[in-house]
Image 1 (cartoon, one colour):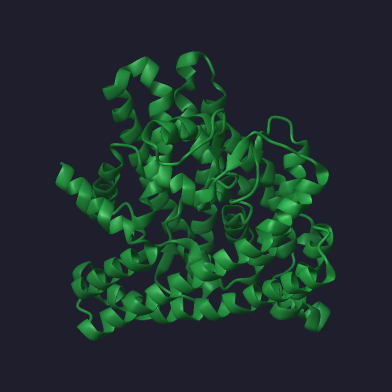
Image 2 (cartoon, rainbow, N blue to C red):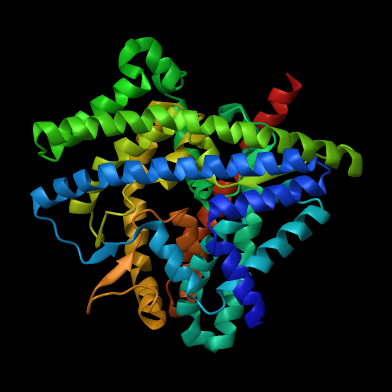
Length: 457
C-alpha cells in the first residue's frame, strides 16, 4: 500500500505540464498513433500547459498586489487567509488516504466507458485533488456520527459520485466547447463547470431581454469600438484602471498596464499550441473508436487551460477582481480576505460556457455569483485549517485560518460535502444539493438538444 502511495504521489508531483502529456502519449500509442506523432503531441501539450501556467502566474503576480493595495486603502481586515488553489491542493494531498483517489478516478471512468454511460476519456488525472478536497470535508462532518472508518467510506462514495457528474458534465459540454474553442474531440472534465448548472436558469431569463440576446463576444466588441477592443489596447486600459484604483504612481501604473496588455496579447497565442497538440490525438482517438465501437465517438477530457485563448474569459476574470474585493468588504457572513484566489477562473469559465461567450451576460452572472465563492471559502476554512495543522502541510500562525476564495464548483462542492449536516438537523445543504441536481439535469438536456439540432441542420 505504501509503495502504491509513493508511486502515485511521485507521478502527480510532476505537475500537470508533465503528467498530462505522459497520459496523452500513452493514450496516443494505445490508439495506434505513430510513436513520433504521439511524443510530439505530448510534448507540445506540455509546452502549452507550461506557457499557460506561466501567463496565469504572471497575470496573478501583476494584479494581486494591486488588489491588495485597493483593500489596504480601505483598512479592511478579515481573519481567513486566502491560500489559492495551489495551497488547497497541497493540504488536500496531505490527507493520508489521498493516493487512493487516483485509482478510484480511473476505475469509475473505465466502468462508465464500458457501460456506455460516458464518451469521455478523462486525461486530466492530475486534478484528482479536487475530489480529495471534497472528501476531506466529508470526513470532518461525518466522523462524529460514523467514526473514522465510516467517514472515510462516505468520503469515497461522495468522491465517486462527483467523478460521475464530472464525466456527464464533460459529455454535455463537448459540443459547445468545440464550437467555442475550435478544437475538435476534446472537452473539459474540471469540476469548475458545475457552476454552469445554477447559472443556466438565470441566463435563460437574461436571454429573454432582447438587448442581451444578441451576439456580443470579443469579436462583436471589436466591431463596435475598433482598436479599443484589441487585446493589447484593452489590456493596457484595464491596467491603467487598476493602477488608478490601487493609487499607484504613474510609473507603476504604466508598468501594470503594459504587463496586463502583455498577458491578454499572449493568451490566444498559447492556445494555438493546445490546438496543435490535441488535433492529432483527437483524430486518432476517433478513428480507433470507430473501428472498435461502431457509431461511437470518444472524446478526451482535459483541464480548462485549452479554453484560455478566449478573450471573453479574461475580460470576465479581470472584471471580477474589483467586484470580488467590493463584496469581501461588505458581504454578511464573509470572513475570507481575497488574495491568492483573486484571479477567479472558476467563475469566468462556467459563465463563458453557459452564455456561449456573450460578454454582457457573463459580466452579470459573474456579479451575481462572486459572493458564493466568498461564502463557500469561509465555510471550508475550519476543515482545511484543521487538516493543515494536523499534517503540517502548511505552516500557520496561532489562531490563523486558511481557505480559498475561488473554490471550483463552489455550490456543488459545498452541497456534496455538507449534505451530511442533516445528521445535525441542518437541511439547507440537502436543499441546495437538490436544487443543483435539478438545474444540472435541465442544463444537460438543453445542451444535448442544442447539439442534436445543430448536427441535424
